[in-house]
Image (cartoon, rainbow over all chains, first blue to last red; front, top):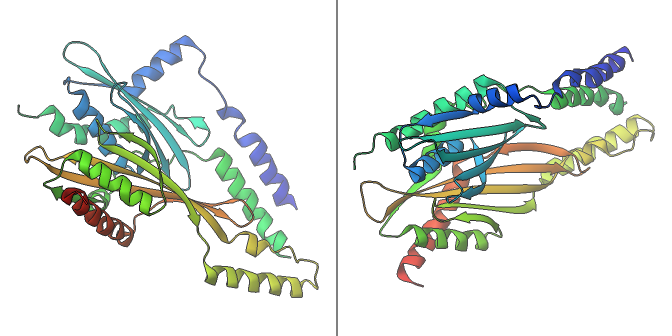
Length: 134
Length: 187
């Protein structure tokens, strides 16, 4: 019976520290930086297609895709659930900014390494878009 | 007796599920990513992206899917359906286990726990993406990715997974190829 007590405590206490929501202005800016990458291209279509291809490579299924609003939403199921939204917008006259935000099961992902991994995967797909010869 | 064997496992699963941490490789390309991409992709020439999308929605309708999303600017189509996930062999096995449990506990443990854990229905979702070949006119690659959530008889989540079975994709593309041909011929 002791094991029940221990496990119950684990369930009750285990998540208590992970419910912090992002309210402070500072962390909001920091989170945006973690979630955003800039690319030296204005090819919105090529960038969005690279995002879709990367999401497929990572095992996501696309929930929503909108070219005009440059927004892609996708879900990955692998005995866990990740829901991700990626937006593309013009940063300046030469660059596009790609922002990704994701949640893992019920929690938003704030780990910089996760986004780093995503953009490393996206970089590979973006290679052709970035080096397209017109 | 079975209840007491399952309860600690269920609690551990609950603890892990509630507080699970993001797997390190969740956003990393796996070593099999290229291989998977190949079995999920086919090329079609002599057809426009719109013809492929039309042919695809035709096949999906044939297979009982509902189209959830189409964005033709990006060649993206998503669809879903609910289907039976029942496995007669599994069900027979689970019923036998339940009967054994029932008898061994002298009819105290007859709650059909095993039967309730058997697969019942599945929600299948797929994305199909049509990409133009940058080097050839009217040549497109089509990539399909499929995932499913399986529910148990008792209503609990059984499993959720991405389908990596080559035969499933082969069967889908066989049907799509026929549909693309019909679309091309204007049938």
